[in-house]
Length: 107
Image (cartoon, rainbow, N blue to C red; front, side):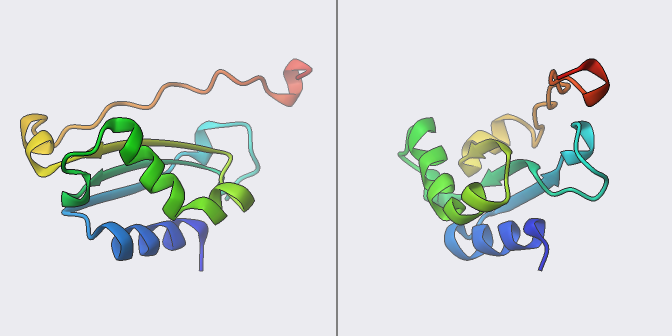
């Protein structure tokens, strides 16, 4: 099973999201082709009701603890309740461009 599939499966099972996007953004970074190391998550779940942003992120980090330890180098996330998601009109934030240097840059 791919890292992306594993993330999707764990989030689905734990948070029963109304909306879930798991985007592999590894191609935007200085990693080998086919890498699964940089992900963006957009999760809309009733499990986030009455939780602060920090509590929501801790919850997701706990679910993905093994992947964060072994596979994932970078993880960005948007965690919303259904009401918040509706207010946003289902729009997500664009990911920033990678600021890391490449091997050709001597970094």
